[in-house]
Length: 113
Image 1 (cartoon, rainbow, N blue to C red):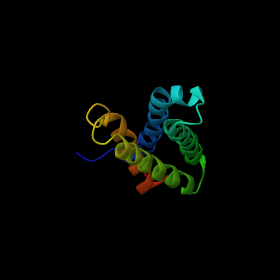
Image 2 (image 1 turned 135 degrees about the horizontal axis):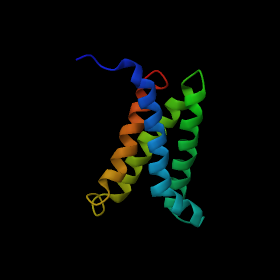
Image 3 (image 1 turned 90 degrees about the vertical axis):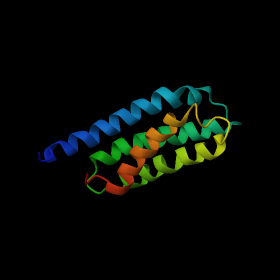
Image 4 (image 1 turned 120 degrees about the vertical axis):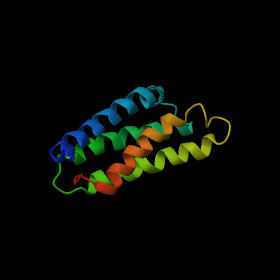
């Protein structure tokens, strides 16, 4: 069976939308607390900023914004994994791996997926 090539654009947009929803569900509460003294506020702010930039990058002709947002979504979970190691690693591993995988997808492919 051949792959459904014309569905790749739809799949990329679904990934963008689902990542934004995932970030909203997992990071927005920390962001709205607006506690400038915590590291998690800055991580949440970066997630929200790059989620918006990933969405905007999808509308642009060049894929630079998408690639940079993908790189950020690849690096931010790694930073969180390093900070959570080893005590909180097993309980929240999925929350780190989903944005990491989607970020890697957009980092390697940009808008040309």
